Each structure stands twice: as C-alpha cells, then as structure tokens.
Image (cartoon, rainbow, N blue to C red):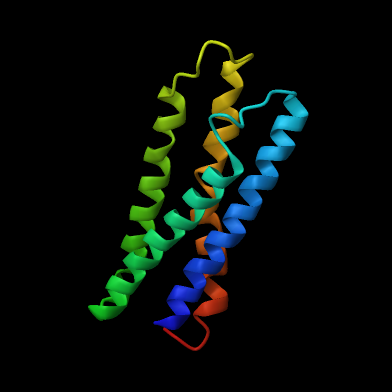
Length: 130
C-alpha cells in the first residue's frame, strides 16, 4: 500500500516538474506569457492531484483484491486524459492576450504528463508482483 502511495506522489512530483519546465520553455519559445491563466503552482497542484487520483484507483483495486483489473483501470485513466483536453480547447482567454491560439498547444500536452509518469514508473514499483 505504501508502495502505491509513494509511486503516486513521485509521479505527481515528476509530472509537476516536467509541466513547469514545459511551461517555461513554451512561453520562452513563443514569447507569449500565459502565467496569469496558467501559473506554475496550478500546473504543479493539478499534476499532483491527478496522480493521487490515479493512486486512489489503484489502492481501490488493491483493497478489493482485484489487481487483475489494472488494464481496465489504465484504460479508464487514458480515457480521462483524452477527455480532459476538451477543457483547454473550449477555454476562452481574456481579450488582452496576444496569440490566444497558442494556449491549447501549451495546455494540452500537460494533460498527458501525469498518466505518462504514472505508467512510466509502474515497472519500478511492480517488481516481484504478478
């Protein structure tokens, strides 16, 4: 159980760090500042929250002794990751922003960072388990 919690927290932290780095690189590369609508704190807290939700799903499977359903849980996480991109697509920026069409290119990739890190760390925490 602690193994699952640690994996979720570590995934969230790594996802938050990568999201903030991506935010800074994207803003620097495009010379557009979106920090008033998407701050580093929002990126970090959302990443950690998303990974902890995934962790709760895995903990539920563990408690119910239904770990054979991990594949279904992974598909559910993937589905929610894809559905979450509709938020940035539908989001309307204030009129004072230059180049609002660049916002989805910033926000959409970050929606996949939590699941990406959660799944990437999976093999390191599942050694010896089937």
